[in-house]
Length: 421
Ligand code: GAL
Image (tube, rainbow, N blue to C red; front, side):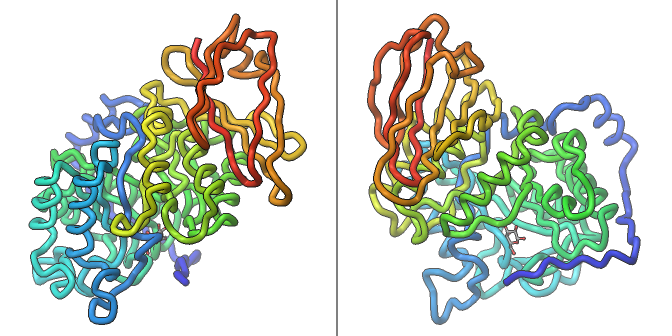
């Protein structure tokens, strides 16, 4: 288990070596989401952590250890098996890629045994497949797994990543000594990445680490980050998915309105295609991550994935909901009996609606909705065409405002609908 380290006593303020020009540039950008032109729709890709964690043992487990071979194999498959074409563009390295020490010039270096060709070479390979490469670092003194942290090295590390051809940085928050250095560090790295002139998506965990001490200031966070983790790490279990959804519902008033093109709430990776979720639970994760406008970062083994999980992850209609250009995050607007109903406004006056069956006993349950209650009363006024997208596609036809719609949903499953006027 990874223990996040906090020492409350000492106030160690990270040095902010901001260049005046960058500040001027920043103030011109205004107060909306991080305006680096990136993540205008939620980032899609693959991230190694949930499935492969910090497996360093390439002797015993050559196919599962964190090595260039793993990422090259995933890159090949992302290009050849339809993932890239479905939108999964960013292949992302998480913790445990580094050598235990920086090099003599103070730069981060990849572990020489596990990444013998180096990260620049890997980035070239990934780019040759029409993909982008993400990497991981930490705002504090060490990464969560104990590798060198970026504290005191933000500018050097940003430049190193840009020189290597990195396209996304996941910046973790372990081993940061207090909330001031946490905020300063996240901001400093954002500016440092910007100064390299390379387009690098900036994925933060700032609010997650701040929350135990302070209410996050999301205006600040969206100003500096392209997406941000708010809550615990996802696990390959239904309990984990349920806890993320429950947290989101409790906090939706605070977090939904801050999401938009360039800045997204990140409920963590998709674990579809692994071991812990039933089919209906996988459908629920996919449907709700689409409603929440969440980054779609799969953590699974693309070398061994069922055709059912693959079809779910590559479902074009569901991805279109997730990637809708209006960029508004959905929310839960009703919880009654054993059901939760979520909705998300889409472009061209369309809406997505997800109905979850919360019951985990018995068989499928029916749920009947007033059409007039959907989309703040607007979605189907005077009528709309309804298509069921999940668990399987079905054209349900035209519904007038005064009608009702009956759905039937498996225990712990979800029905995802698209409503068009
Ligand atoms: C956690 C982080 C995870 C993963 C891990 C690596 O704190 O939330 O997503 O990056 O560190 O050690």
